[in-house]
Image (cartoon, rainbow, N blue to C red):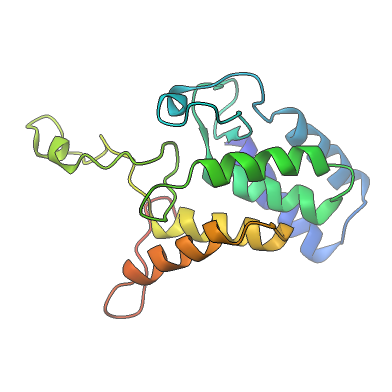
Length: 178
């Protein structure tokens, strides 16, 4: 995905060359323009009234922005120029907080999509009908909210409780998206 890859590459450039390079300015401007602000996708039926503010993994996929890409891109924009991208970052913050599931975690594309009974259907052997919250996405959302200094610490606290509940006995966490 060019959005995901560009977000990660921006972090690498920031960590090695620092900000305000032509390379980064161009990339961050491109990412900023791809924020979905006008279209409410499928996620909206569970989150009525929540304004769109995420990024999609793919080009031209306004129906399925995901909080994972949104957190990565939001962190890159914030690290590059928090003043220039303040409105974009604020909209991402609002959307990520609004997409938190009731158990405190975040899923990639939806909130509270945990009808595990569906995974017992004969044609659901690939176990991909649901979009439950996962440790990897939750951790990236917490990182984003912490980095930008969100004034609303409640979602961060709830996310940390989710991570604590979902830690494996050996100390690791299992993610779905890497």
